[in-house]
Image (cartoon, rainbow, N blue to C red; front, side):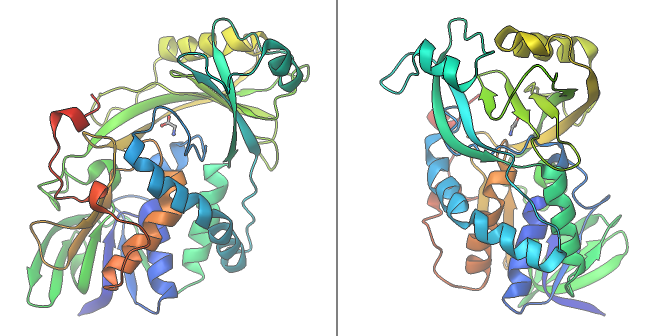
Length: 358
Ligand code: GLY
């Protein structure tokens, strides 16, 4: 009989960061993925640690700030276990605001920061915000997991779970597993897997492209507006490319890339940085963000099932929120007080119409 302290469904950045944190606390962990680890949103992401994005819902801030405070240590631990360094690529973001404020940069200041920017009618502020390459992060996380005794089971779908006395029976396509506790980290699939029927998580598609930054353009920072971002890779194997994203679409599990949408994103980018208009296109792709009605994750005990937890629905910020999510979920699972109050993220929260973003 297979038995672990903890079974996790979903080997994305949220599930594997939690597995590493629980393993660090001395627990035995099994992680299932219906396909390949880190194969979905975790590697489709742009990699901005965008805690100050004005599009984030306000209650996300305390989880985001906790995550930022843990990020260096998180990356250091990954490096120590995997041998793979995950450097930051940028440390500043030019953020477009809806209206001008005391933080708005003057045209002269903008010209000094990014001379080739044509700001049009945008009001930009400068944020101290880092970005990293999620593919690099994924490689480090996977190598770190493989350096431990965490039992990683790819191509294994969790079909159902049953809470029995002090344990949970986990029925998978590869047989039945038992654990003291079970955590659903299946992102956009969390509702579809029927593991947490009271939660509502839906895929929200994002199409993106990567271009080669022309040698005439120096782009050392992220540029972000309400509908578009440009994220340069400044080091490592992808150095010299920039990611341009992203659409936000309710299209179910469709990941088809449409040339017209890619052309629109490129046009938005070139409107601000004309040098990008003809830059060679290197890649296009689409990812599925796990979105919740109020755009806040579900973190906590399943309202319906004893010894079962949900940690899913990180929407646009899974890369940013992974360290804090792993930290507080591990505290909760170990019956310790959590570093921050998690009431705003409770899977049992009542979603009022005013809290629902769309
Ligand atoms: N995190 C960026 C996006 O959701 O497009």
